[in-house]
Image (cartoon, one colour):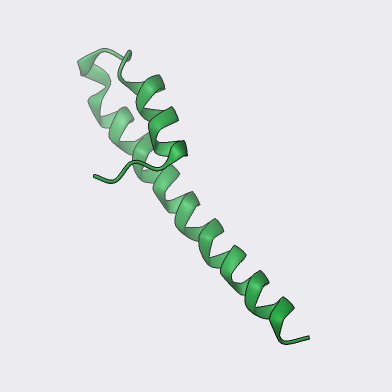
Length: 53
């Protein structure tokens, strides 16, 4: 898995969580990667919108 800065931060937070919370850990990572993807798409649209002016 490629680590972005935010994923590294989530990793720091989640690795201290006990193993019985593994499903929550994976949910947190899944959510953060979804947010990163969504924001990345938004930022890309913003860039494209600015260049067309």
